[in-house]
Length: 257
Image 1 (tube, rainbow, N blue to C red):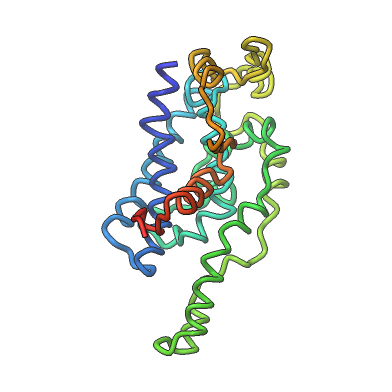
Image 2: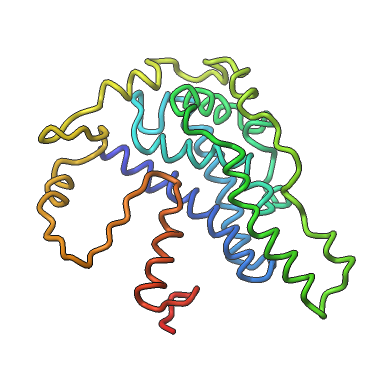
C-alpha cells in the first residue's frame, strides 16, 4: 500500500497534473507558452522517462501485481497519442522525442500499454478520446470567424486534430506481449481478478479500503444531497465544476458571481 501511494504521488499524479496544466493553462492564456506551461511540458517528458525506467524493472507500477495506479496510468497513456499530443500541441515541445504507440521513443511504456490493453481493451475508445478534445478547435474557429481583429488567413493556422486517427487498436494487437524486455509475471487480468473482494456482501475492487466503505455506509444523507459517482478519467472534474457553478454561482475561475 505504501508503494502504491508513493508511486502515485511521485510519478502518476504529477504526470496527469502536468498534462492538464500544459493544456488548460495554454488555452487560458490564449495559446501562449507561459512559464507555467513550459514547466508543465518539461515535467511531462521527464515523468514519462522515469516511468519508462521503472517499468523496465517491474511488471506493474507498484511491483508484480496490478493495482489501481496502473489503471489510472494506463487510462492516461492511452489518451496520450490519441488526444493529448495534438490537442495540447505537445509535439512542439522541447524534450518531445516521439509518441508512445506510434514511435519507438518509449519502448517500455509501449510494451506496458500492450500489457494493460489485454485487460482494459473493452473500455479503450481511442476515437472517443480524440473527439473529447475537439472542443478547443470549435472555440478557436468560432472566435476567429466572429472577430474583426483577426485576419481570415489566420484561421488556417490553427493546428487541426481532425486528421484521421491511426488504428491504435491494431498497433497494440501487433506488439508482442512481452516486448520491451519487461518482466513477465502473471497476466494483468489474473492478478486483478484474484483480488476482487466483498465487504458485507458488496463486491468492491481490491484497492477499496474497508474504512472508506464504512464511512460511506454510515454517511448521514440529507434530502438535498447530491452524490457524484464516476470512474477513472470519466469527466469527474468537469461535472464537479458544473455542479459547483449551478449550486453556488461560481464562474470559470471559481469566483462567486
